[in-house]
Image (tube, rainbow, N blue to C red):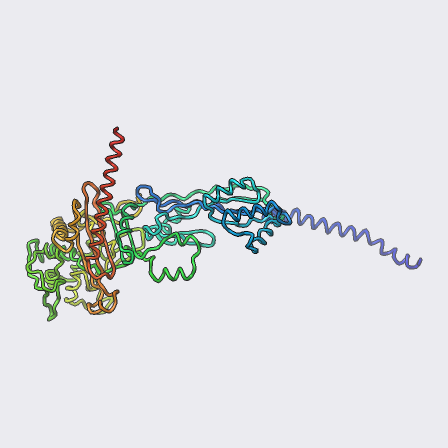
Length: 586
């Protein structure tokens, strides 16, 4: 025993050294943690107990010319259950859930998964969603019965809303989800994303180790996006939405010729922007794609202009001295060139017609004769003077269309331009393609004397450039377009009284005539274009294109229905103005 004690004595003397070494290591570790790692650990600690939440900013409104809301935000109220760290739900909490279930018409007590989630949230101080988008009636009942209940949290945020649904959808566009944020995917919503989205706010929350809120601080207030005011007149938009046939593809443009403002616009097929505010299924998306509803046919489609192009052809002939305003010619139903018959739309012919009558009745024969004496390059030059074959400058994506010339055909087709092709081009066929918005600018320029850049925003600058056409030529075109309505192809429009109308119709061929009986997609497009004025109201330009309907009568009928409704609206507005004025005087 004594021997064993003697053996332990030398080891005991090292104990102080072990203790000293341990103290030194602890001090070094404390120095490292407290001094060297102070900033890093403080940051990590703050991350563990703080949460930075983004506060969405209300998106800016899009309004029409009178301030009517076209795109806005509606409040979306959600109901949450806030846990308090209890091991289980109390009897009072069970009763609360049962009453809430009846109010929101959702059987919570029958949904085992949801109940398990609620119980777990109660244990861990978590917050879970019970119901979303509460109605005003539901919200009122919950506030009345559970206004002081700490387990129920009501949260309200804003969701995009298009009150007129499909109206002007190709101009407004729609929102899509990028991660958790909504962004403009088309139209004004996309082009003015930075203006509309505003600035997000920041909210700081402090929580404990089990996730319970200890304090909340607003670091940055959310700033709402700016309102965009358009040139749209929602009352006129309503009219053209109603009168344009639902199952007809095409477009209807209503434009102010003086300043280029788009007053109303329809493109069919269309879509409801509201459907994209929530996730949609793959089947829904592919179903939409099949109909191509996102294609803006006013700006992003080009079509053969048909007889509308005769306005440019006649301008070129008058300016070049090929014909004059008194020129007349006999139409026998066809003309022969290079041993081929080029026919008029009226197979039996029109008889003797003046140049004005040729435009009014859309006779081809005089224009075939003009084409014999005019090069395609001269014809193309005058088409470009009217803005055809080039972008209008509107803020939306748009096509250029095509005005062919000899250089173009050599470059693209690898062959010369044949004189016979000019006979097709002069009546608006051949390789010619124009966009409806280009035609709107062309028709407007005939009456204003300048080409105006189309615009959709109220505060956009008005851009004009002089039309390089003689005034006498423009006067002749106006006279001819008036004759279209009084005794020509658009005579049915004359049934609408008290409106001064200058018009041109067109049936534009899209394929060989023998294909029309095979498939309806080969039927002709119908055009109706006009400049009109009702009493003291501002003049407007109409462009109507109906795809594959076979005859210009279809577009003319749409125009007639619109003008009737337009007249009724203007009379109603004028009556309201008179009544308001009388009330103010009295």
